Image (cartoon, rainbow, N blue to C red; front, top):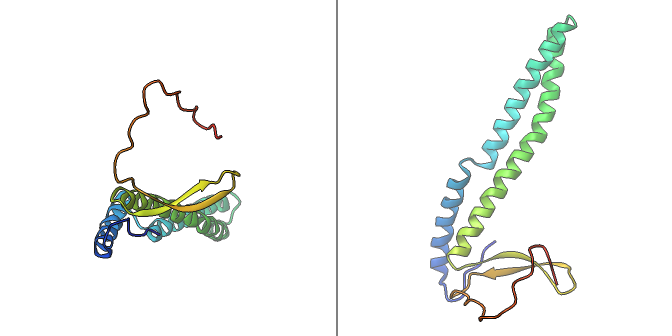
Length: 146
């Protein structure tokens, strides 16, 4: 969910939203539904083939193929969900980056002083942040929180 940035008109927000949706779609190259369908079908096909081979080894390729199809389909359903989730996350990240770069407010997770997780909105700064004055202490190492 993104919100119009400070001083941005709703019409500009709508135009940027459309532009960022196209951008995010181009970054992922596939829709979440297509990724899931492809994963589910390929898992079912592989499961059927492996089941048929196992069934042939035990003298009943048809039963093996049936068991393989069922097992492959069950695995494919789980795999499809994972594929859809990964594509949706990549799309959401690209969209959020685009809207932020255009100066709009986007969801941002952060920590309060008590280290409890909270959500808020972050807006791209209007101007660049100036460098620290000469003689300032170095920043803390990555991963250190105060």
